[in-house]
Length: 70
Ligand code: SF4
Ligand code: SF4
Image 1 (cartoon, rainbow, N blue to C red):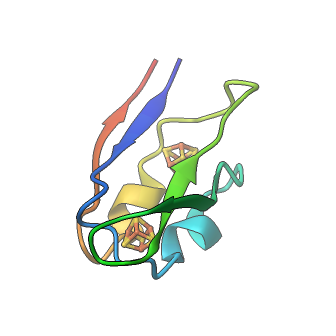
Image 2: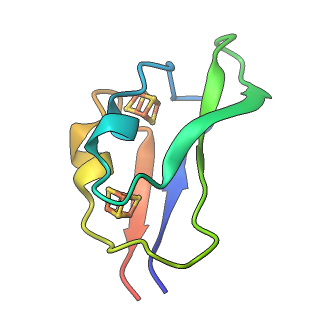
């Protein structure tokens, strides 16, 4: 089961990763971080994540720190 890890304090809320995910598994969440932005959430109830790392590669702030392929 693939999944990603988001560093909450690095995310600046540009939301480029949301556009990038081919499975549309990222969304704007309710939680606000220390930069005052709404964090991106990984939302994958049906276990569709490919572990492709396209989200992590796109992130300009290296806020998606790990991608597990399962
Ligand atoms: S691309 Fe990176 S900084 Fe931008 S919203 Fe996604 S995780 Fe946050
Ligand atoms: S690893 Fe791929 S499928 Fe999984 S959240 Fe990132 S872009 Fe989407």
